[in-house]
Image (cartoon, rainbow, N blue to C red; front, top):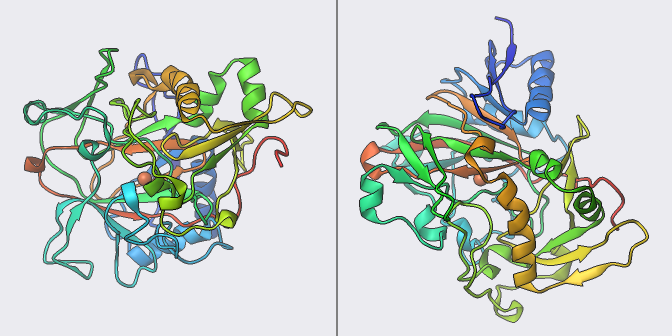
Length: 381
Ligand SMILES: [Fe+2]
């Protein structure tokens, strides 16, 4: 059995030129050579679908993710001391770690059976666009096959830990039913047809490439800072109906009313993150949680501190609007037994809601807080 990496063929009219399929490997018995090929493929192709991993043991899935970052702590990305019922906020309900896996969680929707890999009688409930969007769909629209991208994001707590490097997501059970129509509902009229239960991706390197030279200069030299306890801080604000960027209105939670926090755990991230293998630059900012910009036009420019939430919101939205279009979004097909792996420092991803009548969705998900800070293109300290 020889491992083969095949880039996804680009659909007609699509600008989403990333992603690959990997065949000919069993992740339960991974040689060093095959591991290096998969690692390289994740960093070159950003998103890979490894086919045919029906029998993958959760503990082996965790070991694979940890092997990508051997100096990292052996915990799931959301299983840190800083994530509690009080602080998880919009992340939603606490996750279910699969017994014996160290840090693989069961995520999805619906009843997961009497005994799912040792988890007994779990009903999974992930956050949906109904929780997150400014103007959710009506139940009648949903009944007619309409859906939304829930919320594009990268994985990680980011308060008190560094964003996870690679996320792996194994499809154990996919919902079954007719294709769905993702609606933007932002005045653009954009729609996209998808199979139920899949994950959508945006390439943040493509977003960087869409910046003007002047904007690239700013992005290369600037930093963003999330709020402390960011998933609570975001408050009553909502995400735009397209799934990326904040809608107007709503209120953040005042800092003094947040669950206890310490300034040392609030990091300042570069606006641009550099792929450690390819050197490719990505514009990587999480709109929901950013509270402060430290803007600089160049190495010798004076830094401007921006805490005006409306200015931050509109700055980000006018950049996001260039990429959040059907031709730039990748929704790779994966089937039961396949495992999706992605460079969480270079893409954003979103789940796509589906009707409960399609049955339950079971995914084994694992990412680990990075042992290192994401590297920027220039020293931004
Ligand atoms: Fe995620």
